[in-house]
Every structure is written in structure tokens, then in C-alpha cells.
Length: 169
Image (cartoon, rainbow, N blue to C red; front, side, top):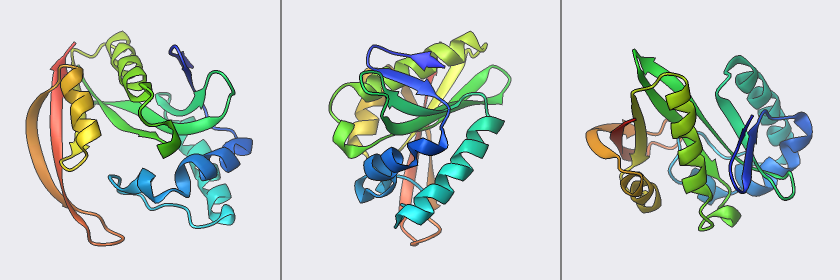
């Protein structure tokens, strides 16, 4: 478990499905710059929670993000090793009702600290080119662009450019 001033990073529990559905999975804004699809109904959200629990159980550094003040699930994040002493974020997603509060900054700072604790010397971050908030977060944290890739989202054919950034720790 990780903690910031306002957030707790923990493992998903089945009872969190409703909050994740309400705050993230049913919200098109949450998926504008992501590859996965939103969950169209509560039954799919419950199944998604089962998959999330399994995914997080297999990955020590994959988390659900909870508001410290209420315990409500509001997003997800994680990190993973790439090769050698290079680690990357595996996504930072917060529900739209929680944007603009500094939570993204708190998440990124916690991920950087965790990666460093795990032996990372370099950390990579990626962002859809059109995601201005994510690019601004990378710049604020001192990341430098290190590459770009063209992709197509499988379920709707949307083309996007993924910008890769890195930072020495």
C-alpha cells in the first residue's frame, strides 16, 4: 500500500466495483486517451472488477486509487520494470470528478518514489499526444521526450500518437 497527502493506493476489492463504475468505468471522459473501453453497464463493471482483482493480485505494483478522506475508489495506476534499471508507469487514471485537484501530481510522485525504491535509475512515462494535461504533468515533473509511436485503438480504429518521456531518478 502507498499513501500520499490525499490518496491511498491499495488493491481492489469486489465491493469497490460500484464506485469504480460511477467514477471511472462508465465515464467516456475517462477513456478518451486510453486503449480499454468503458463499461456500459453494472454487470460488465462487476466482471471488470473481478478481472481487476486478478490483475492486481498478479502484479505487486498495480493499484486502485482511493480517496484517503472517504475510502472511495476513484482510479487506478501502477508501475512495471522494463529492462535493467528502467521502470515505467502502466497508466494513471482518475475519474473526471477528481481532475484538477493535484491528485495526478501526487500519483506520479508516489510512482517515482516507488520505482526508485525498487532500484529504478530511469523512469518512463507515456501520454497520448493530444492529452494536454498528461503532457503538462510530464513537463512539470521534469520528464524529457524520448520517442513517439503511432497506434490504432483496436475497438474503434481511432489513431493516436503515443509520446514517450523519461527521467533519470
